[in-house]
Image 1 (tube, rainbow over the protein chains, first blue to last red):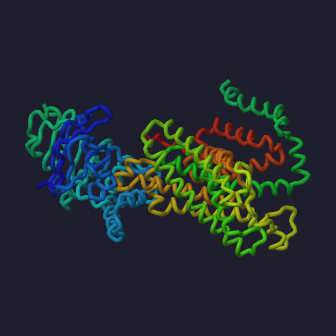
Image 2 (cartoon, each protein chain N blue to C red):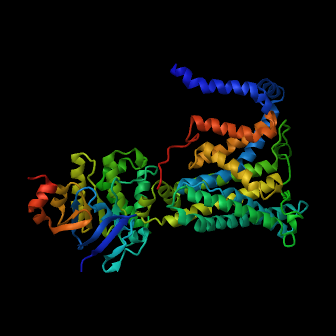
Image 3 (cartoon, each protein chain N blue to C red):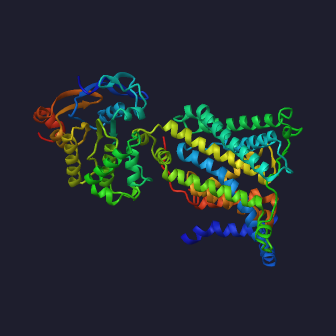
Length: 237
Length: 359
């Protein structure tokens, strides 16, 4: 059985039918990516898994236990950690306070301190600026902070929403390096990305979304080779 | 031309002030003369203003905490402050302590009353949020605002009813709506003269000292709590972005409840302090006191904790100054005139930053 299972979810924003029966699964240790155009429902899928929006129908399960019935903060306690689109760091909190918030659901002080050091060694920039307000960081630094903050929750499944958006190419590489590093350490990752080329390079499998529905699912390798994917998302004609 | 247009309101304002100010007690040359002849009076009013302002500031903190986290003007907050004063009065009545009791009895009664008022108001505030505001959190802004005004009236009437329970609480006196005498448990001992043997032209009484010290302790305590504790950081995170706080594993309902608990507790403490300082409480004090406290919070920059403290003390000082040198009848007009002036030039308040719109 797969680790995270999304079963036929329908999510609405008021009367807008945003997700029209999405089903997908993520196995332990995998990187799975969702690709698709703007408004296809990629972010909504992640939000529905993390509990920020509730599905009207369907189920989300972690190791067979339902998540969609839990409030968002309980889902975090299950180890489903989201790094949201647009970073959403707490601008009025310092860098170190932001990282502390990432570990909010945990009580193991020593392990938290260890993880903090890990995040700082992953992103030395954050350590330099740890007493600075997060609102004063650059976009790239904020993305590092958002990612680090996610890692502070010791994710069993990490949901990454557009981690490369608006970043300079060198930072995009850094973020994707980090994703691969996490993958090697055994973190399960569900990645939503506009940059389909990068996403399909690091992912094991991928799903293609189109207006709230999954139109294609395959291994990353096959998707890269798929003509319609190349045309629509990889810019190869 | 640009320059003229920019300063025109200011010039017109100064004109109006000079011509019509005297009608409302503002007579520049008389005031300067009075201050010159008796500067100690100004200092004395500063002390009074500081004491009154400290109480206003503590109530203002409750408005600003709640506004900071859910962007609601909790109109019922002033009335919760009134309930705090009533609770304190009731407890003091129940202990049987009067002005002639021994110092230790008075202290015990005051501490008991304080504890009761703090717990009571904290819990009441949590209940109000749970039933009157929580379900409206994602409704259009006006809905919780109207709800808050409704709760304000309900709480005020609870105060009126409570004040009429003289058969249970004799200390409430005969008339439910009349101001009630609050026992003077502290007394007016001049700190400068009787404690330090200084012969100064101004007095600092034990009452003022109590109010200023307790208020300062509460403000420092709150500051530390918000700055350094886990729940304090969660409050700041929730205030900035509720969804982001949720995905950190923060239970925002609990954080919001805690914020109301804190605000209520502060209002309870302020209720006791008000009673001990002014020795009279009445069921409408929440409305008038609340309005002034809310004004302070806005003046300082609503949502900003330091701003609320600063605004409260500023308004206390201003009111004392106006009482002495303008005319006490016009004090509210002056306070609000200053508020309007500040708002026109600095819409976010003196220390306010632009808080982003929250859904």
